[in-house]
Image (cartoon, rainbow, N blue to C red; front, side, top):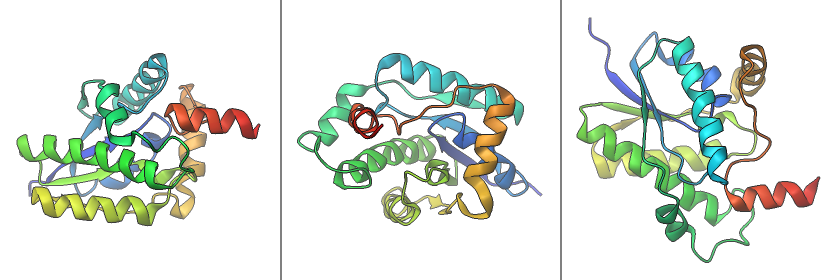
Length: 184
């Protein structure tokens, strides 16, 4: 029996060190790196390379979306002082999932998912609500999960460490970087 095609949005190598193994028994997974929120630009390339390494470990096809930070900044304009998990994060996640689902719809994927909920910095309910809402817009399936459960974040961190890939210490945007710097 043929497995349904899934486009898996990944945010970094760490978060993609665990999720694919949970999906592969049931889906034909392709990794999609869409992260125009990443700052500075070299952060985009560090995380891209780490995600690519993990995709290779799972022998998965890997697609990189265009890096378009100007479009991302337009989405979050005026929200620089929002806290983590606030309105800015909702807009950021919606922007990336929207691009993921648009790509999936245009390329014959019947399912989408994201690794974003692996991180303790992110609210799985918030992410999944956005995913289900956008899935209706694009008439595509979204697999909403809290990948932190069953030690998902710990497993991801350990595997990333073992693989020797880049492990970041902030969510990714300039605002989360500034927040991380002020709380250290």
